[in-house]
Image 1: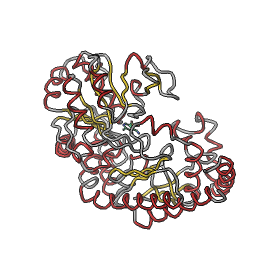
Image 2: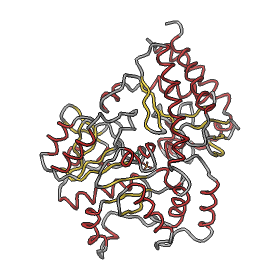
Image 3: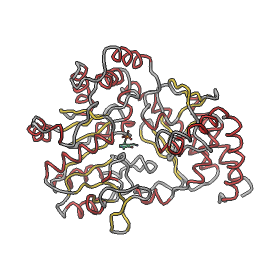
Image 4: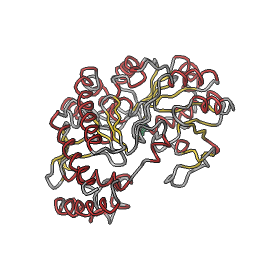
Length: 449
Ligand code: PMP
């Protein structure tokens, strides 16, 4: 048993250490409380451990330096937005070059053709569109699915996350669909818009889709936003069969599962979705996302896409598909996230998993560590079968303490995840540094048990 008192007393010491070592961040945080709501430019930034967020100065490859000159091994990588590593010279050069020739014109640039061809080659779906963020892409895809099927609802997995998309901020409470705890001001009751099913439960999916009101199932092939929950053998094949039988479009959101390989889990596991969404790292940090359509879906949408009123269809965005994003995607996908890059990053994630797993075993804790490609995450329970089981094991105090302990020792983890993401720029020494620090934290927590 790790007691609350133990966590609290260790945490207090870590808070003091954090404040002492980050005076410049402290001053900026104090100033930021004036003009910025909650002292941050984006709400999630309040979720970092420590009394205030660390203000960052620079990031390159797998390293980040804050305004106090403290250097970190970055295992967060912008929660996947920088999965390639930060500030890659070839991407920086392409962005600078494109920015010098104009960014936003509402016209396609030649890079668009390369980008469409490369995405089609990687993911196997023939027809592509751009978006500004994965959230955006998901919202557009849900619209297309409702339009094509004439059905009102979308289905998602219990405890999924697909961005700030209203319909997806829903969970099961018994048999009822309710707003996810924390969702602010839902625009429509999610019970009206959304069907929710547990991951790894084909019968539940079959029963729910049989009602006939669901346009599409939007899912990650493995849940990555409530720890990592892997699909059981045969589950994803079953999902394809059930969705097809009920005329429900299957959308794979590969925004995070791109960690499984150059074509995400879709290609790594031979999946056959109707639509694929990708976002976050494909532009090397420049905001952009993309969605790919099967030939059949593309064919059915090509008419409306050329319609006179497509500008008010609820799909698109003035800055979407801008030349800067296209240049960034081209520079990124031509030099990163390729087989040879995963060949470097995945063994590091394996080493991380082995190290963390040894610490867990050594202290006889009922925790586990899971891995998908170059992403790994530990969670405070045995491997769960679905999102609800994983959510039941969330322990914010423990997580906050571990994150702060690591941050104070130069290792940055993603807030609201116990996730470590590896790029080709990390080293084995980086992994071992985390294992050492994590081992010390767990030893401190369990000492005197
Ligand atoms: N899809 C998935 C699977 C995600 O994990 C996220 C963000 N964590 C998103 C979509 C949304 O990405 P963004 O916040 O960049 O829009």
